[in-house]
Length: 223
Picture 1 (cartoon, helix red, strand yellow):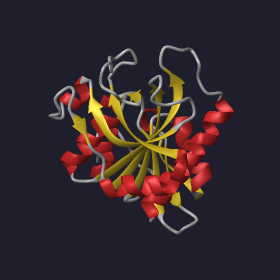
Picture 2 (cartoon, rainbow, N blue to C red):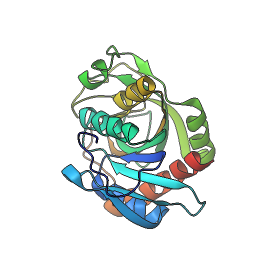
Picture 3 (cartoon, one colour):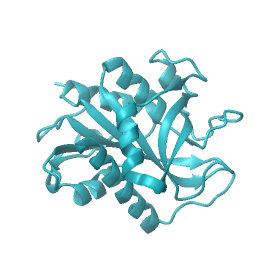
Picture 4 (tube, rainbow, N blue to C red):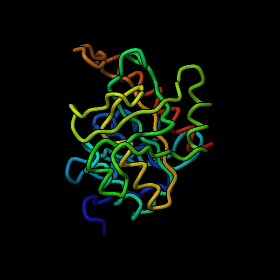
């Protein structure tokens, strides 16, 4: 039995990884037919069900930050997950991305200890699975931009001079762990805040973008 998750329903081979438990519920209602809660231990809500296309899918909250996310992904792989897409939020870098943009991750530059603990030196880029990335691009079309991001362990982490479009707290360590475990992982991020600004997306706008990103991620896994 994994150390953190206590599944009460099946775990699919394909999974969406989201930080926020509320987003897990939102996407379960959007993407799954008759979703069943598959985990509530530690507040890491997860749901299992069948998509309208007939595929089984797990939607799992990973908590906040890279350390939590990699622990959850490790448990999921132990439970049988083979492919996953991170559907998360990020802070957009001025002149590189705008509020509400959907970003398909081409590479994530490690800027924190959670990736370093997995053997990724700070400043090193980690790449997602190219097939999943291509499918995410195809599903989002002109809505999605293929970009580089930086992943930090603290919201104030430094990404200056890296030339990235956005900063988040999970993608690089998740990609590093996925590579080490031999599973396929891609990522699509929503720019929910802007650098050097207090501006953020309104709740209703963010939720609609979460649904759009979730649909693209589900389709990429089922394709």
